[in-house]
Image (tube, rainbow, N blue to C red):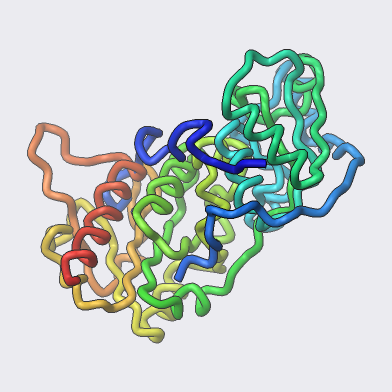
Length: 321
């Protein structure tokens, strides 16, 4: 069976939302992608819907896309993956045990659906066609595209391990709370070559089904760590000789003039929507940088600012070779 990605189009190297509040507000362990995916474990039993999802469905008529799955409350989450591209990348990556794939029966034919079907069969992952009504009762987003998968939650990595990767390029998110923004940031991060993402354990969104859909598969390839607090994590990164850059509209250095082409590990720190970087984060970073603006507006949202900054880090690092 072929796992040729071209059958369903490119892997989504362009497009998708990008965002952040004030700018303040952006070796991978993934293996080679060309060969057949590694087999996942099999569990033919359906996953019961959570009590919180049932309660939300009962009160609103439909589950909210911004609610976290139960696993997200315990750690990173990512146990329910929704959206065609996200599910295909989950199957292609082969790095997590996949319990089942659920699809709405009688969906219009599409190459990407054929890919999902073939990959699931090849990996012996149960593929369950269900009615539209049944699927809506299980999905946690509005834009699921008729496909969802249930898998083992994403593994948490250690901050020190992420910092010690060769040519480390980390992204530290200081309190991003919007799932759409986080998903867009993760998609950008993967495309820009970020080697690890750091999230705070509290007062921040983790990997909900909305994030998996927006990230379009990026969560399978970018290792993530959860830390107790961003300021303490920044202090630890300094101890590990990682150059930390906070993105802030009041930064006194242009993002395009930073000394980041010398091969040092770099951590780019993005702030929360609206308020940007916290005071302690600003105090702990090695440099505060801003994105020069040429229009009437004075800020970008966090995902868009993160996209500009991530690719500037990538451009600057590539220029040294």
